[in-house]
Image (cartoon, one colour):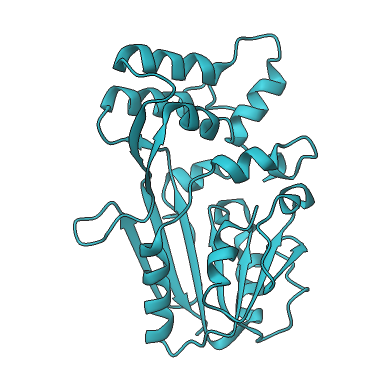
Length: 267
């Protein structure tokens, strides 16, 4: 999380090229929420980044709070009349009154938090019928280019590439949050892809777009600052993929992300 909070982090690049969750994720969350008698008044998105999830919640909830420790990220946040953004950590949600939130979401950020402190705040701010929903995703894969998928996995994992340049918490995400205890009620964990569940993160993008997406990784920023005199490691990887697969910057590729979704009630 420290990298995303840096004043030099390119939040505009992040907003433009980070993947988005499709309607299937929100259907899953809202169905669970309604099943447990949740209301659709106030939502909070913690670790909101540039407001990608908050902006979708604003289509369903009357009031939405987007919360992030990085003022830099919030500078590029999606603006909606019903969204209020706050600079705050997940472990300190004092901007929210107790028992005031119907749904609290965390997207691609749960691995950064001090979990006992965070869940204490979650249970404080949620209403008795409130829902907690977290989603995380691991390394992107190419649907039709397995060798390219392996190159991206190596880029993110190998110590001679970006493997040692992630902020603390990345291993928790790579384990699909299995190590995180969720001290709440009616906890469900869903792992996607799954034969009975629809995809929640997939896209078709140009290789040029994909290149820019990889450059939003925190590890890439850390690596570039640590090794300013080395060739651009992402450009090297993407160029190698395009040569192997006979692709050009303007060619479109189908990509997807393995995801975990955690749903729980405030009980």
